[in-house]
Length: 442
Image (spheres, helix red, strand yellow):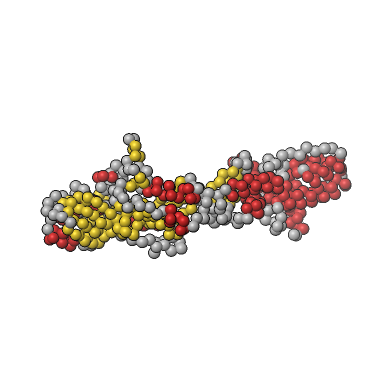
């Protein structure tokens, strides 16, 4: 290290310590970028030792002249400067508390924090971890005041020091690496109180579900009079997966959703299952799929998901085509020519839909432009037929059939010239989602 830099460090450190009492850590942190492999306490102690040596030299030449300055330094720095003053002048020194950290920072304190953090981390069985630190505005302000005098060229923040030092100790205690990009668990340490808050990353699973019965809602649907529907997809996944992961709860992110009274059959509907605050993270996929096998609702986990997968499912649903099977009742007798005309007029047909009246209380009035690619029909009875409808995503099928009092045009009702109603509806195909490494639909 050049002599000029050493002189600059000592001169600045002495000026700082004449103004602010600082512990070894908080003084050394000002020069954190100098000296590899050193702790900030080692840096701070080294600087104080050099200051003690230089002040001893000055004191031998002019003991009374140096006394006042050395006393101030001894009160604010403690350590070797306090010991020097006591030996030179035979007077005990009461060292002041560190202005920045309040005397909290020490190797022992880091070890205590690390032990507590490691105990918390182990309960969640993660693959990696991260340490975060929360400081009060008052600590931040005091640190800023010192750096205004010292400069920031070689410094680091108190938060960085605590994160690094505690993180190294936690890694040694747990055998886990730090997860700087995607930590399974983050421990936030409140430097003021020492309290620790675990933030557990959810487990995100990509899968497909089938809803084999009707009147199953997506989430629990409650009213003032009680439950509106007896069962929900959310309850199914909660019952099956919460005990396995020892998690708090389950959140579903499906690629669209079918009506409560519609079944989801055929290819199933893509879904991301978000497991909140799991204490177990690494569950064999075969075990998960065995648990998710059921008669009413069934699901298969196909792999891991990401937030990009959720975004893709939420934003891409209208871009994916669907195939529906509808059982349709018409209030007059039908002929084969009626159904043939319906198939012809619905081939590659643009559909204009206003928000259905049945959901206007939950959604605002908008105009949707969608497309029907094809309709295939099969006569069931004189007034009943089955329709296989291939359409773009986001098309309201019930309104495509009944016209919703003219709010959907064209419709089965307008083409047949009779009132048509959807008796039963099933989703039998959802166009697959394929994503690249960045989570974009391909």
